[in-house]
Length: 255
Image (tube, rainbow, N blue to C red; front, side):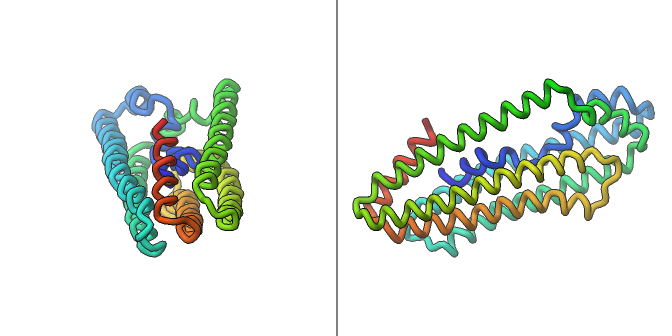
């Protein structure tokens, strides 16, 4: 359960739906702004398809995440095999992003720049209330992350009987923790850049790909770092200790 849930804590949703979510009442704004019925209907269909693609991906993501979690918990699975299963999860997101870029480009081909500016006008001007809400959410995420890392560390350490092995795992865990906090900072910066880029009226395919690739690569790097931690824990635990650690982690994340 650890990898996917840590990703949710650290990186949030990952930005797949940001264009729709960053423009309040997008469909309503399109209906109000675009007067040509044929174009308006076509644009609304594209928005529906965009949202449907995200929903389909969420179902696929849940299936793949469960598979990755099950593989991760099996100590007989090598690091290479674990990462090969994560690759499937990663490439599913790459396919989604490709389709979302297609929909975005078709969207901007069918709406004039003037209309698009009117549609996103409210989203460009961020109110003080929204900024405060964002700051509160970020502080809550930081608190949740602090709590999660502390509890995960305790679960790992108290289930390793050998003091030397416990110390080895502790050091590896602290290295992982520091790296994840670096990723939190980077993720916030890239999310702000993504949101700003998504509100540009006519980004190119290359610009959109580069924007999403930042987030994808960050998650992929985090998976690599988690694989290193997982291997270190396996190397320094007995089969019984490993089983108990996974049991407690699962209970912690389900609580």
